Length: 83
Image (cartoon, rainbow, N blue to C red; front, side):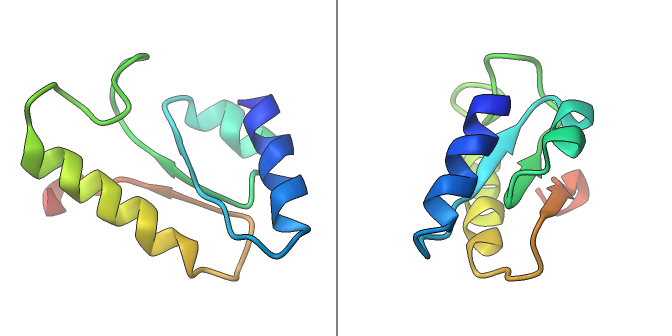
């Protein structure tokens, strides 16, 4: 996650917005990437269970919604009630 956060910062300096997905919210809070979405799934499954298209689409939409945020750094948690 640290490498991704550093890469995001470099890309953002070139006026290109970035967003990442994290499974380790505590570490992400320390790294403070510009935009990140925390999901409650085990390592290796950032988009949840395989074959759950509705869930995966909801996660992707939540990620894309963060792209337009300018109040960075921002770390949001996936709201399971909306999925």
